Image: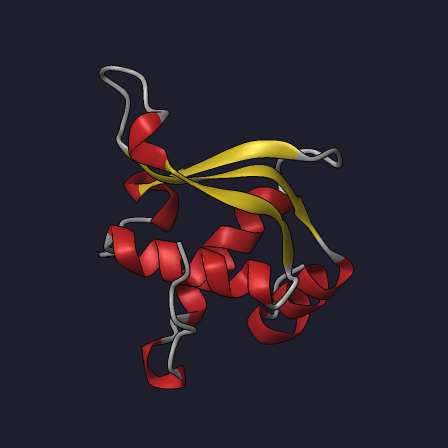
Length: 105
């Protein structure tokens, strides 16, 4: 599924930060990372917003990985995953973005 690139005025740096940061704090090896509402620190995010932003960070090569719709992978009773990034790995570019755009290391 191709989603149009996000217009700058709809781009949310907070969402990008959470997407990258979760992968950064997982492991050095590629692994499947699922994103659900609780990953966004209580901020209001919609599923399509998360999908667009995840596609954006993969397109920009901040993350390597493959997007998979989360609704097919969620276990019963778990917080519903919006999306899963298969074999997610943060790139050097992604680390630079976290460092420069968000002033967090």
